Length: 216
Image 1: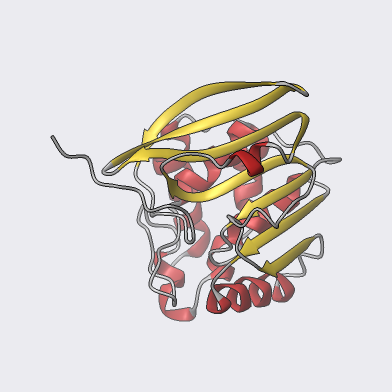
Image 2: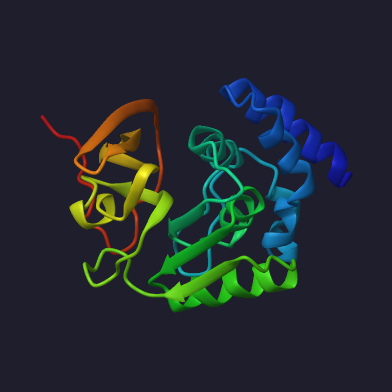
């Protein structure tokens, strides 16, 4: 398999057509190598438009969804990010490439170890992977951007409160089979502005209130 050809095709045939046009994001997909965050038997599949299975029974996001998250957040180098859900560590690596520091909260010990190991092996030093329940109100902090890498029915208030002024929170909200990507921006200490970005399908966020299936 020609890895670089597969990477080129992923960018040009999947990601760019999905309205990811930020050149910095597209260039980053070449630098931060997705296949390095998957085991040998999945490396050739890392460029496919599919949710690859993870060792805890959950699934990794598709490449185009990860890229769209990066574009919508518009991260700056001085910003601190909270990522809820470690996956393989790849999304954290991309966030870290554009931000000052990334804190990852992961409730699965298996995924915590997987992501931490992948990030260490790929020399990503500005990420901390923490084994914790992100949806517990005991977890507090101040962040310029928050990403919830999974579906949920509503965005917890305690996570919204952790946004700095000017901060953005991206989450996938609603009922299966289709969720809406929502971007919340803290305009002031007392005001949050919501923008609906696009509809997609994403696995439920571990530890969150279960996302229900739509029924008449």
